[in-house]
Every structure is written in structure tokens, then in C-alpha cells.
Length: 77
Image (cartoon, rainbow, N blue to C red; front, side, top):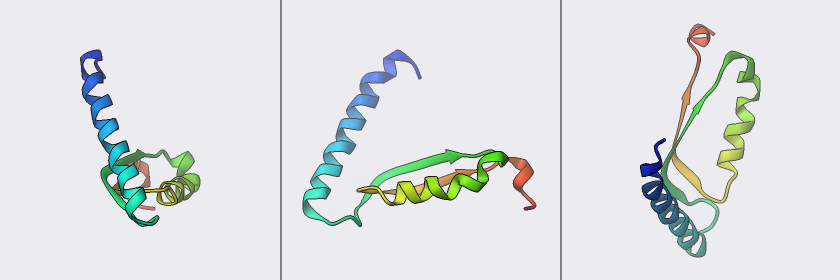
């Protein structure tokens, strides 16, 4: 990340926070924010991956997508 990108990132974060708060006021826990969460995992941590995903889904707002990238060595398992 470059320093010149920080203002845009902070602005987008503020937009998402405002959207989250307005949705919180109008809906229950089942609201979905227009964001994608991208996760990368390695073979030694696959056994704990479900805890991470459950934690994300248990939050006050859910992401529109969860993208999971796995190591090539896990392809045939």
C-alpha cells in the first residue's frame, strides 16, 4: 500500500462504517455489507480455518462474499 492511497482507503472505510451503522439501526443481525473478505490459508492452519469463517459470519454484519485461497498442496485432499 502506498501512502497516497491512504485517503481513499480511509474514505471507503468511513463509508462502510456509516453503511454498517445505518443498517444496524434498520435491520437485525442478518444484514449484508457490499464487501468481499479474502482469506489465504496454509496447510498447517486448515484445521483452524472454520473458526475464522464462523467468527466472520457471527459478526454484526456479514460480507457479501468470502473468498478462500488454499495452498496448491491441498488440491487433492
